[in-house]
Length: 198
Length: 198
Image (cartoon, rainbow over all chains, first blue to last red; front, side, top):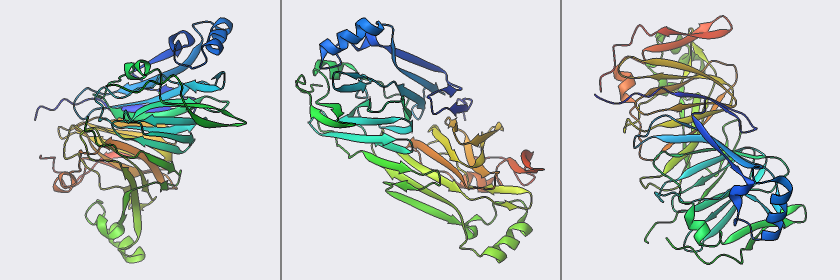
């Protein structure tokens, strides 16, 4: 047989999102989040206060190979925050190959995985350490930090999935937003959402 | 679009291997492990002592759908034990679609993931809570409990991967065995291994 043999990845995952053995990663800063939040005044104020290069979330990942059965494993660390009443979010995406599923397993913090279909279904799944959400294909999804500490998840998905980020920005954001509700959170319709179009 | 929309899986994963939200699972008993361990006398003695229906490991899983991008997420709980000097193992497998990768993330206990290729490569990756191994395609793999508590891992792999268990039994076991070494463990060649043939 001519199978390409790839070295296994030995990983140490911290509850702080650190990942020994990572092969790649990226960081997102406040300046990358323009247009994401409803309350543009509150966002502008924080941009003034913290600067465009203020870290808002980071991703570490491990890829072994790129074959058809390959996976990407990693950690996502979303720092706490709010813009007006709206809690801090990741950009969110549908997979470019939309049928690709994804696992998110919460390692620490308190968050919500917001899931939506282009046909108008919406789910908000609350996550604390030890809870996980298995996101099937065809769900747009975004992490939201509703707590005071970093919201850290382990993720795993097919290496060929890709990310379609544009779908959400073209739709004026996701259909649902997650906002403060006393000491907790609630989901509200996003008034800026104009509907998804693939 | 005609995408089939599947409900997300909301899962609660205990460090004891419990999995609220599971869709399926199975258990393996001492009587299922005949021929797995080198020291057949030590195995027979435990079979006499504990009986064939003595639980040795269990798997809980969540499947959302069976499409090409679908995943299976679950927990594996391997109880501690030893047969002669050889630590308790799962049967082990190569994926039926051999290029399918798998993630194992240790939730509790102390184990080793033993990885082998049919061409003679071998790796023994030690795992405690917070450590993970990203098993690329084409690696035969098996969990081994080298501790005194259940060895619990979260796993995630492609729903279409399947398992080839027969490869290991036809080879007289994996090439490497993991045995007691004082208070720890070491990897030794398995004298019964006759080579893998696909």
